[in-house]
Length: 304
Image (cartoon, rainbow, N blue to C red; front, side, top):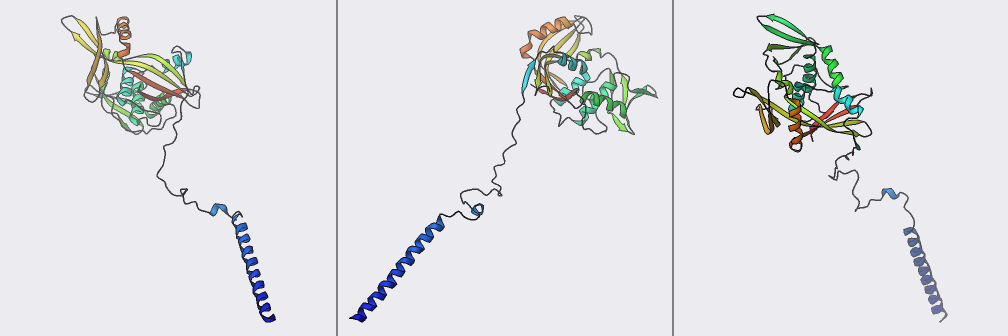
């Protein structure tokens, strides 16, 4: 009997030890679950995309909104720009032939054409008589660079040969060749083309300060004028068009016409018809940007 009691007591002790061990293990396990991991960043959340992987969602860079403030078209700063950039029809034609550009994509040929047009008008170049009625007009690189600086400011460009625009003045010139620091073009004097000075007419009507004067936008209404001499009436018929097809040399979308006694533009009558058809006439925007020297230079052009 005593022996059985001893065995039973031993079993009870073993059972008690097992119970204590089991409880201890459970408590330890619970405490370990509540403990923060040593390196939580090393845990991978399967539901979170891997930042190192290309998810395919490459969004465009945000568009920076410009702050614009309309100012009077007669404001001094606007007037100074209009006086400085009083482009003739040949320069204007080059701009409208291109149609649109910004400071980051001004065509190289446009920069060269514009400067060459200025040089050909103010005796900056020289005429070289080749004999037999042949002349060559030459402009130095230094002269061209001066005009480029005056109009475009600090702009990237390359000296090279180029073709002239499709509107020409009374002096018809061939392609401009660049060689040994000289731009040269064959010349032929035709005369009788004085009306080309009125080929493109712009009327400025609105101005904006952009980003507190960082840029200035100037809006213009523009018509392309075709002249035809009517022998029966002994008058010039001047037709204003909204567009010009440079590829096919055609005026498009006529707006109004007037008559003139000679090859000068009857401005008062022309302006009256211009104003009466204002809403029909296309608008364009010039952008002038202030550079480090504090002056404004041509940096953009587009249809409004």
